[in-house]
Length: 147
View: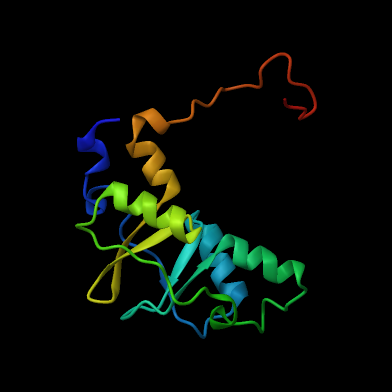
């Protein structure tokens, strides 16, 4: 991996625009947004980052038998949120994710989300970390049994 790749500003690889949701929205509505947009998280707060809601948060709430129609995003969101600035590097993003045990970092300017960077973004940007996907299972792999 070259220093150029790891020193790339996050602003160059972030996904934008970032999808946001207000804290009072129900989990059912948020889940619909996640599904329709094909994304894994929503930044909570339009003018200021109040939190982040992930697919895992939604799944965990359903497993805990919380009613998605009456539970709000504010009830489930992670807060405070670990963020990064667009001028900080991919290296810093990776370190911040690792140290904080998160997979998604909202990119913030003046307290407002301007994008998001995920572990997937980092993996796609850093060729030496790419994982090759095969179009079909290997012949010796049967019924989901892996070594």
